Image 1: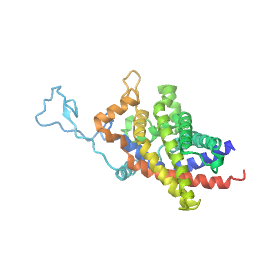
Image 2: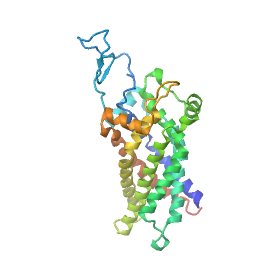
Image 3: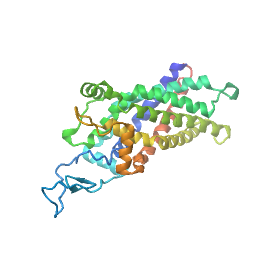
Image 4: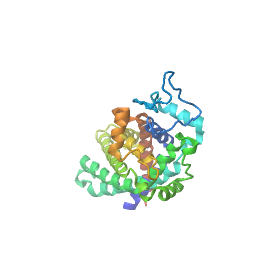
Length: 326
């Protein structure tokens, strides 16, 4: 019975992950907006020096590079980001890193969904119709999310890098051929530990997402059915899953922004890394861009998390019906 939960959760997760991958890519690109170390991807566009600048001077001031004041970075919305990706990189670029998504869902989501199902069966109160108290649902989600994230972190790092690659100048792109190529090259060039870069963030995010997503879905679904609002069917599944997606997006977005930046960080041998860790990344991000920078990409996050959660749970319910006799 336990293995069945892993299979059902894995199938549903892969379907949901692949179908919402373009939205996830847009979210990653938006979360990386504002990082000051990213060079101009179009080197032909030069920044004009002010007319009264001292050409040989070394004076600097906030927002300047070599004494030349830089304009604040232009931040654009999800639609503009998507259009720009298509214009500059082609339609296929919307699925950059999809092989990493498949591997990530296979490792991370299959583990968390299956483990949550096992804990749910063990901790359910049989005297209460087999339902599990909300506190136990949250605990089960925290445990399942942590284990799943630890297993799937290498694929998560590869996915973030493959999705972010197109925003770099041609000469600096990593140009990973596939998720396997990405993981292999990272291991060789940056060490095996690089595959678990940002793992503490991944685990924290996964705990928040799994606890809020799975627990709220089960709880809302049970409330809808118990109060006779709707029967246990497609309408109930869609309503409960969309609400669960919103809760998960609100809870996880700040950690997701920091995770994305730490994972995408390029570390050169002998060079000082841009961020020394998650806390350093959070502090630098807030100082440079303000507290709301932690909610960058929230619109595409909820735009992706909503459909992802709907597809996930609707698919899961259908897969359960197909496999109920096995």
